[in-house]
Image (tube, rainbow, N blue to C red; front, side, top):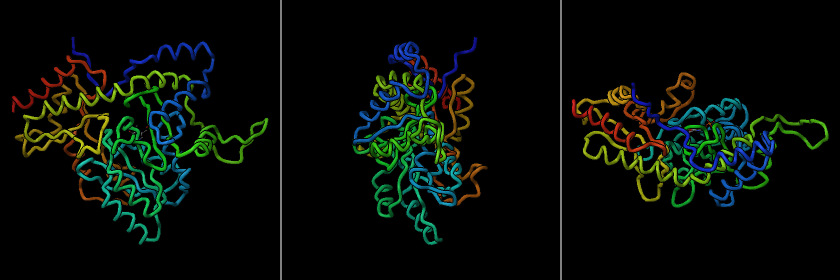
Length: 381
Ligand SMILES: *Cc1c(COP(=O)(O)O)cnc(C)c1O
């Protein structure tokens, strides 16, 4: 019999999700409204602190879309976006018929390079259009260089949409990721650090902004006994069932962060003795990653020719999932014709990088299999 598959990241339901669901089914609030939504939002807002208000939505992509609308982005506008990310950061720019302008990463956090951000914005302004928003991403849970990016954005008065979809529980200078931007994005997709099956949230600066997002997310219904609409709205609200799962997951969020960080330490130990493999690490004590995914760079000139593809294939042979790092947006067929400001960093991350199994529910047996599969590659070399 073949060995069970080890995945990169799977749901880990180890809180009281079942109880919340049972109560929800009994209450008959099987709808995108109900007490779980209110409480889940309250718990998230308390967790993030900084006076933030949270709107629960049916996915993180919807949160990016609403953030762009609230930032006033319109058709024909330009929006700066980190190239090294999942497509959900960028696609909503096209939903609003704006133009994405992609920016490369720096080598320390793999996230938006502040120097290139500066060049990009200055060049766009020189060409006659000041970007309307900046989308920066804490990839794999690693905080980007918040101070540098935000100081620059502030000086130019450009709102920042902080894509924290992968970084719930990460902090920068002791403050939670998702609270630094004018808007913060969270995702509770099945593979994220906590899940509601599918789901997301928009972190808002205040109550009135939150009310606007709820309005837009519930078809922009005007006050009237009948259905009346003066504005274009969306059906983006989270279900009360999903929010029930979310409440259970909030009980174990800190534990999940701890366990994902332990997976990262496991990889750091495993690769310590192996030349040419680097695990992504925090550049200083200011950065605290939830290590949603543990990722490595493989340098074939130092590994005796072993590439990340060799590692991926060897793991796959043992039924262990791993995946190349993000294919940058500027290399995607969909986005290749949009402006890009780069210096080769994220191209090289894509060439040499690999995401490894990182879930909070991996067992000692799983870790042993992963270690053996990897060490075998180097023994045979
Ligand atoms: C997961 C994710 C999102 C949101 O995705 P949904 O699946 O719509 O919840 C946005 N940005 C990044 C970087 C992500 O990884």
